[in-house]
Image (cartoon, rainbow over the protein chains, first blue to last red):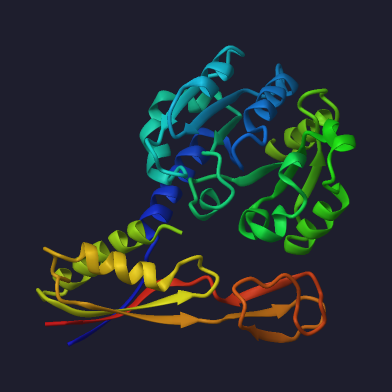
Length: 214
Length: 114
């Protein structure tokens, strides 16, 4: 007997992601899935973003790491509600991991929830968590060849932050090449050049974010 | 990608569909996998065979239909089909912007059950 079935294999994750999205919409909170390689500067960008939005937008953070609480402690010091997820080895966050911690956050009091994904340039882009948009960080020290080597995350993201621009004089990486390759993969992506170390370029990103989430 | 968790998900759906339709044994499962879905067919077959023991799909074979990457260009309006997994620009006019029509599928399409 032949059974016709048309079912998406990753349906389970997508279904939970849609449930999360409904919860976020009802609470009136905008959600960003923040992704990058390890060490590109996601947490540093978050710290700068929290400072930049202070007094105008209320933030909450979910930190995803394989192990440890260092990132959550950095966010906690800034007085922002934060939950740490330790994946215990998994290389990305999935929708169910997010669902499990939602009751630990004051969603109704928040304007913006940032989900800082596990550092990884491949897998996080494949799993929805219920976000409104994906944002990624690429640091100049990673090299300008990364967009064409790891295209999916660049294709899926609405904004790219090129970080560590203060190191430009010491590196061979070309910001122009990154821009050109990223725009060929994703013509509608917004690109920001930032140094979380010096603060250069942070305002432009924060202002864009403030308008986008309201 | 994550062939083991895909195989797990695939088995759960197949067993649920089989039992929900009043059957008890799955003989085969047919799936469509787009070339740009980021899934290695060999790894998926291996994971499926390793994980099916003790389920209604214990003796089932997994049949994988690979779907090519096709798209429609926003600049020239042409439709294309390529061998590569990733398309960076329209192969017809080199335009940067296009819509993928197929190639990202990861679906169960048909099962044989008794």
